[in-house]
Image 1 (cartoon, rainbow, N blue to C red):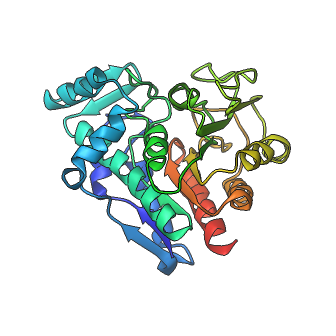
Image 2 (image 1 turned 45 degrees about the vertical axis):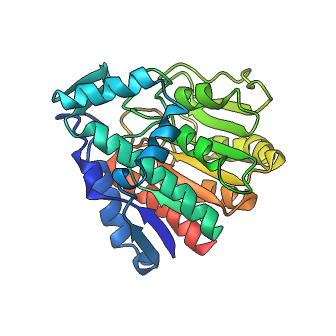
Length: 308
């Protein structure tokens, strides 16, 4: 069985007509998983309600985000919503939904550490562009960084790695973890592309950052070369007690917000490389905006976890 942590409440984060980061993303994935050949091997799990872990959850978020920014998100939502930045609209429910999404990522960590096997967090809004004091690029709270910080407080966890295979560089995640010796961050991303960060010569305070910029139109050949020559050696050398994957699926050829040439099945290949490093993997959804290919890519990820 593979846990998928999901709630229909994640659909309540409304971004407006025609916005790429829309509730239908999660609906498409959930429907695809429920009709997959191995659907009976998925354990659907509701995230822990915010009220049940509020002190712990808010503490984890405040380890990453400035209190004034958290209050800004809460205030804007309480007044009906608006824009946190030009790309990041929120609705009246978005603050509560963003808290629940962060809770779901913590649940993903808990499940993986308890079982030693992968889990998938099917939540929104995404997080890897959010910085300490501002939203950015559809992202509200930096879920991967929050989850990594939380994991380091758990018994026996000394090192956490984050692999970000979203097509856009996770500028927020990197900025929040690059000065922590116990966290490694690795990103493969299209360059040039939004947000214009993630240079290959950035290595973090402890050689704990590996950025792999890839040219537009790169496909499976370029990604395989990067995984074999850079990603796997970097993560294996770090020897993480937990691997968190910022699982964005916007490098498919069909995605409207990038210019890469992956097929959905390629994400199964990437997952296979991750499983060579450890089976203690918490996957969490980031980007991916072509609904059919997004759903097929998540299916490929979970298929490899179940059948590797």
